[in-house]
Length: 262
Image (tube, rainbow, N blue to C red; front, side, top):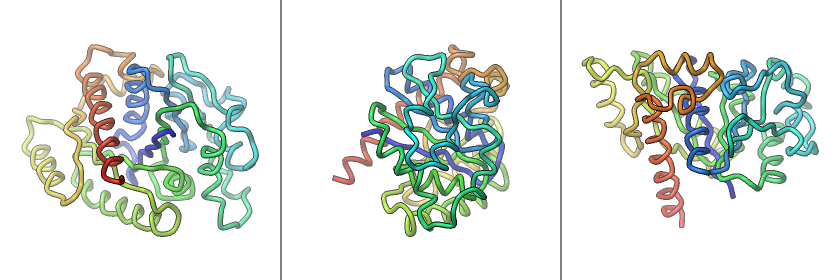
């Protein structure tokens, strides 16, 4: 069964989508079969993986609107082996109003993935920078959350809100939901501020903080504009090496969590 990981943050511009795309590509490089799912109407994961959101025939909205829709018909290949995508486009923002006021509407994606998706090692879900319907849908469908934390003065406050949302989702929708870890992003190691922020994050009890901190670099913005993951766009860069190292850390963390649950 595939391991599902949602990338969640209540704040935009923290490197969430970049991390989802880069980690998906790093896993695919390791010959793991990966399905990336775009749940953000901004469609940045879709375009970041080289797919034009305005040209896709089917999107994740089809699966959420019609619970019986075959997921296989919505999955599209990317240009890279082992990496597939369920795309989004801006029309996704309107689907909540099209759904009946039923208790199970946040569970539709989860049920569809559990029913139809078998042939993947990882399913990675990108979410909007909010805690609305689309993010709750992802939390209902995932095993783990990975939370990017930007090195900024608002980071800890935003993290507390994210963890509150996790608590409510675990109670009401998904008792298996776990935080896999925090990923420091936009780190400037030479500044005292970044060093103090990292120290504060690592002081949070019972919370894994990944060692593969993502440093400030223009390469990541360039790769997003190019529609290529950083491991492709700048394969030899420090940023690509960081995400490859993160892939190794995530694999180790997933194994550790699975052993803990036995």
